[in-house]
Amino acid sequence: MQNEKFETSLGHVLVVDDDPFVLKTLSFSLMAMGCRYVVTSTDVSQALLTIQNSQPPVEIILSDLNIPGIDGIEFFRRLVEANFSGGIILISGEGSRTLSVAENLARVRGLNVLGSVSKPVKMQTLRSLIRNNFTPESRTTDRNVPAPRLVSAEALKHAITAGKIEPWFQPKIDLLTARLVGVEALARWIDPSEGTIYPDQFIPVAEQHDLMDELTMLMLNKTLEHRKRWKQEGLELFAAVNVSMSSLYDLNFPDRVEAAIKAANEENSNIVLEVTESQLMRELEGPMDNLVRLRLKMIGLSIDDFGTGHSNLQQLRDLPFDELKLDRSFVHGATVSDTTRTILEASFELAKRLNLTVVAEGVENQSDWNRVLEMGCDQAQGYFIARPMPGREIIDWAKSWKERSAHLIHFDLAHRL
Ligand code: C2E
Ligand code: CA
Ligand code: CA
Image 1 (cartoon, protein in one colour):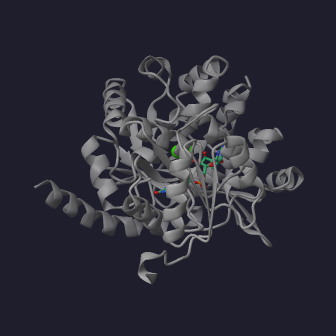
Image 2: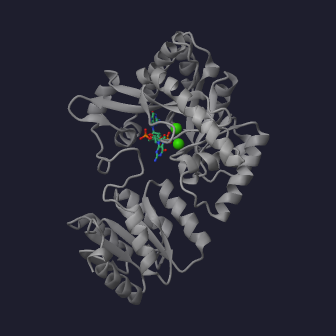
Image 3: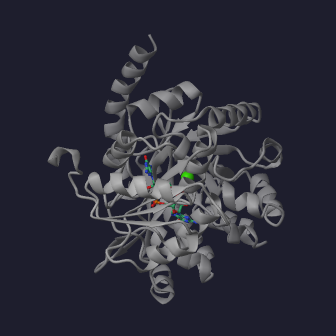
């Protein structure tokens, strides 16, 4: 029956499971659902070869979490290495707790997880997972472009030296008052022939070729210029710049940041540096001195993508941070598992006791907004509020936000009553 099949007929699905019976039933059902090619594999190495070589490319992988010889987590790592950008559905005989932990792990590695299903797999569940969550170009970032194509190091170096990389700014909103309080600078490479090039295409190249430091300083200097213009228009904002771990190893980094802020006639305390939690936890010892020095200079420090890096509460207490940004995998969508909720609640409690500002990232709709408000987050950031925009648009946006936020507060009040 036509309406039983996918509207956008699915091309190529790979099923990985060590049980031949599961493979057989799943491939039969997938074909019946309208998939044109279904390839099965009981072996991960063979599955990876299929992913690398098949034409048309694999669009969706359905994979068991427990395949002999390799665990699901290692499989995710290999998929990231293979630049797999299709959808992933996890299947498991394990309880839903294991599945949701694995789902989060895969998501934070940038994999496009459509969801998970428990065995025995119900066709209805699988069908609605794919139908609701998969579009061939579905991605984890804010635009519809194909999988990242990395740029050349020379071109990037040239772009940085020539100042062709611009900060775009995404607003940060105080949840209680709905006031605009700050912005985060996100790098955009505006190339006349290529158009806008996004950070996932050039940050890895900058990291590999020792260009991060120059990029950070370019972003900081341009951000300071924009901030000055907004101030002249009467808008005082905290401005956050993302910082790579490599910069935190450089003992001169805090002084260079301070010098740049001074040269712009600004206060250190108006600038926030964001460091991702996963990078930080991997290499905590080296950068600690620099973090403390930045903190002593009153430069704001924020732990980015919190919840993805496995820091324990003790580490959270010992780090000199003043802001914690909750990763968007815990914010967008209502499905936070009980385990995750417990971890989040404990982290939140400690964050409050340590006086950290908690920012929710990835607020994409009204219900995300309501939920993070109820959770007790202090600030929100995400597409629901605004997408990143060029610095010159911030003033007009701030005016339009004033009107919109008045409605939002009314909505919140109505929602609470
Ligand atoms: P991030 O620091 O976690 O920044 C947030 C990313 O999420 C941005 O992607 C932003 O556009 C996107 N985003 C914001 N709101 C939403 C939302 O509601 N839903 C979804 N799905 N996404 C949202 P972008 O600009 O592509 O940046 C990706 C990452 O690249 C950043 O993640 C950051 O780690 C890195 N990055 C960007 N600019 C710089 C930079 O200047 N220096 C360094 N070191 N890293 C940077
Ligand atoms: Ca960030
Ligand atoms: Ca983040």
